[in-house]
Picture 1 (cartoon, rainbow, N blue to C red):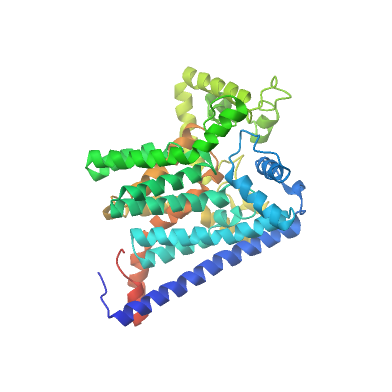
Picture 2: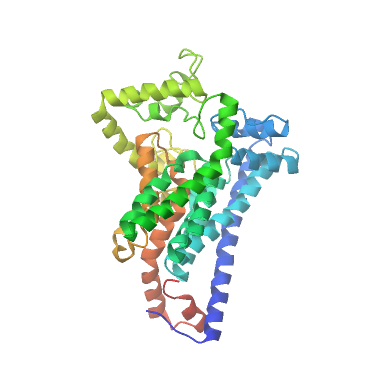
Length: 442
């Protein structure tokens, strides 16, 4: 039901919404700053604090400072460039990178609010922003030197522009959305084929096939155009066509051959120490072009020979994408085991982790209750489905689903907002500014 008020009431509602958003964003920044402060107090302010993928990004960032252009095919340019900028301004201060990432968390919250408000209402936007502000995985992103800190707001920015294109039905909006997607692909390459999934959705959901295909073509063309300079760089640097980056052997890691090692009780780290270690596997480095192609072909051969085992493994990877893989999990400990997590974290943090981990399950149930909004939600559904299938077919871990968390928050917020509003109306009559805040989709 739309609550129609006078112009002063609507103005009061906008002030209330603005003030509520300021509070939510402030909480998001404060929580991230506190978590980053705790990590910086523990770790040395140097490259010795880095491990895993972090070292590759730092290698390129320091290389740029030292006059060495991008020469490592596994990593894309935008996140190392971000690190380079902070290093240059802070005299190679690693603590400063994390503090700036904590501030960037505000952009994720604001973009979540913008997208949820466009899709549903002001109240849904604020609830979704609040979930995003305190979600453990999103908060933890600020403490690591990884692409999620840029990729999450970039993906949200793309969806905001894509929905503007749908609402305004202008090809220029889809061109901007495509450019935004291209920028996201220069941070992390996993959305390179996303225009295909969205093209299918446009044709099926909008009905006008010719117009839908034209919009999809514009989206794809501007996305490809945005990444073309990087593609040219790869051709010049490596004397071969390299779509964005090497895959680090992810096809092989998603194959039955890898699955056998997992079922035999081998740990993720031990596999990297033996099968994926160039010093022990005959000189094949999966992060370089030759080694990546070697492991990709090896993985494809394994999939071709044992397709049913591959499908079984795919089902596991689809679940791991959302709830975490026991051995390679982002937070450590058992997926839903409080005692397992308590070996690494205090109890208050265990509760925080488990609450955040339940979000995908809550979102799935909430989505079923939003049947009337399914048509409006189809781009979000397409994005969630695309990434789930992609990582089920290749490599999957909880960290990779982190940038999709705000989309889950929007679904949950849309489901719970009506109940929250009914409760507030039963408890007390709404003040004028509150009445204006509780509105229908904008």
